[in-house]
Each structure stands twice: as C-alpha cells, then as structure tokens.
Image (cartoon, rainbow, N blue to C red; front, side, top):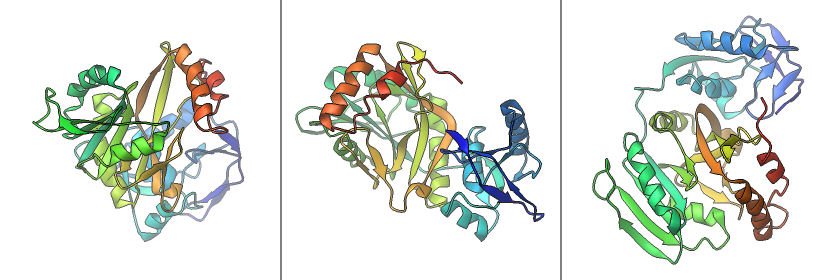
Length: 317
C-alpha cells in the first residue's frame, strides 16, 4: 500500500524531514530509494534497546502509532514517554518522530482472552482437534455452529478445564456480522479472538495475545488486527497481508452481512496491527470462485467479486 506522500516528522533536535513515500496501512514513511533490507536491519537493531529514539538519518520514519505495530514483529511492546506521546497514539499519524520505552511482550502479563470459532456442524470435529494446542494461552473457548438455535453445551477437550469449551448453535441466515456478534456474547472474558473453521494460528501467536490485549487497554484500544495468510490449494495468495481485526473487546460489534468489520467508537485510531504472527487461511480454488458469487448474492455491491482473481494469483513480494 505504498504511495506518494507529503508527510513529515519533527525530531527531538528540532530537525524536520519530509518523506516521499508512505504506507497507507501501517503509516511507515520511506526515503527515496530506501532499501528494505537496510531499513529492517536498522529498525531491528534499534528495537533491541531499552528505548526507541528515532534516528533523523534513517532511511525510514515512524510516528509512535506505527512504531507500536513495528515493535510487535519482534515481540516487543511500547510505552509512551510522556503525555504528548499518549496523545500521539490517540491522534495518528502525527508529525512527531517516535520515541518510547520498549519491553518484551513475553512475560509482561496480560488480560485473559477467549477463543471463539465459527463453523458448520460438518467442521466441528476438525475444530475440536485444533483446540488442544491452544490450551496454553486460553481457558475459554466458544464454538458457534451454523444451525438451528441451541444453547451452549460443554464439550470435554484435552488440556482444558471442565466446562471451558462450549458449543452453541444459531442460523447464520446470510449475515456474518450477526453471527460474529452472537459469538462475542458467548465469551467469558473481556477480549475474544475469533477464527473461522478454515483458519488457524500457531500456539506461539496465541501466547502473546494476552499481553497485546493489556497493551491495548492501556492505550484505550479496543480492536487488534492480524495479518491473514490466504493459501489457495497450498499456495500463498497475492491477497496478503489481508488484515483481519479479530482480537476485540467483547463489547465491540461487527457490521456488514459479508466482509464484516468491527465498528469502533472513535474510529480506526482505537485499533492497531500486530505483526507477531498470522492467521493461516486454507482455501481451495473451487471455494474461492464460489465464495465471491455467494457473497455478492447475499449483499449486492459488497461481495468483492474482483477479489477472486487476486486470491487465485500467487503472492509476489
């Protein structure tokens, strides 16, 4: 999502610098002909320190909002140094170059996170088989089936305490947002990560979600997006990173019959991206073709039929 930019940053020494390119998603600023490898090496080195201070001569620039996302790639969290920094997080993308305290997300403590899964009855066995590996980071799992309404029932799963995993059902009826909202309401914790039956995460990715939830609460953030890696018949699709805002406060509501998104009071500044892991999404070519037609029929004009072509195109960095 790189494009032309007129954004600039002011550094602590008073120097102001403008950047010709910026990412329309994360907000990173890039100098002309900036080398990606050199940028990553410089950033990784500076993120290893106890504090991050923006280098006015670096081939890239970050405000504090973008730094928060960049740090998650290395399992690091950020804390603003002062009230001005806290204001920068609430009003991105500002003109102050990033400066923050850094800390390791691992071992930082966190908030409990529920895991929610949407699936069809035919997929339930596979979903239950996926769960034992996730028992190290969550103690609350809600599964919502697409079917006749049925109250939640407890299901024993290895690694989870009794009653931790529950299965309920309600008809999808062509409204994905309503189904996600019903799943939110089944959570026992204040945060929930939602996945579909054809999606999964690595246990290490889940293990950092509680710390990220705590960092979000400290910054009055209610939604966190993860990159989704779409693999069509095993091949990574060109629709990447395909950010999905799936870690949310359970009071957050989704909107949209298809391609649903959380509705945020205060807009996108009350969300951020994490780069510490991905949602793996398994698709077949036949499913991709059928899905776009189905979504367009459910919500004319919002089904994104053009996305099928991109999903079937292999990823090119």
